[in-house]
Length: 287
Image (cartoon, rainbow, N blue to C red; front, side, top):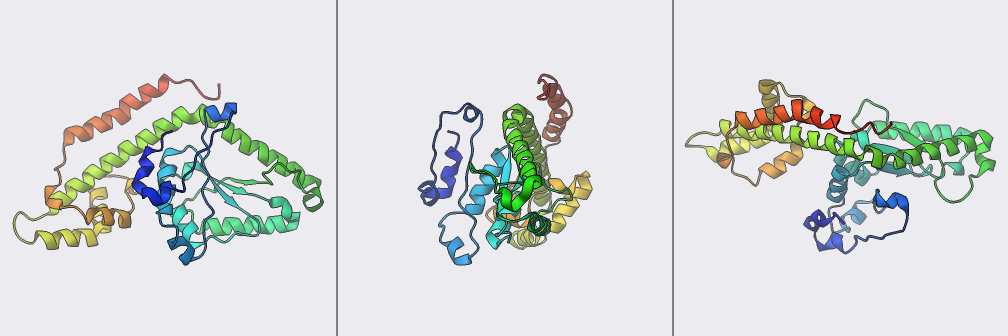
């Protein structure tokens, strides 16, 4: 199993990480990862003893689809859930929302629940596009038609078919997603090189190195803006400022590498020519 990278989260996490295998044709191509329930209290969160948000982010970078599950009676987005959703930024195209146990409310209440859910998510998901929401009762029991009515039952069945279709399409689209992830990482590496070279260039030759480094870290958002303007880069490709500050605090800027234009050009050539040629070798997954 490709989970060796999780060792960085320590034994506190590994002791709670379990794998199980089932004989099913779909599972030959797909791995499902289930997380523990997101906690609402700060005390419970600190007692996890491992970086829950970090683990979630690790899986998000490697998965093909992310399902956020909500119940009609538990629509509040807790502080920990907010941190989890923030850690998913950059993977917006993978995110789907599942409103489960929707047959526990009637049709009128369901409309209110759906509106409240979209309102809550709109304040957390930093994207102009509306996220896909699957509504239904996703278990092995029949739909409670007494609450939903015949129209609700038909809706739930169609939503369940759509969700299952999305899951079945994962192996078909896996190749495209791998290439998209590769392109995303190549662009991130290019941005990283520009940032590191800029910080190196801003350092003085002799005196005041420590003060200059701290000033650059404190004003990192402004430095990102300079890099963006100098090299005409999209703002969305830049890393999270606060996270980058934490990482930079452990390094000496004076030892950073200078920018190597040939390497940047090699990345641009790969993105502009090699990747399009590679895509031509794969068949259309919908053919």
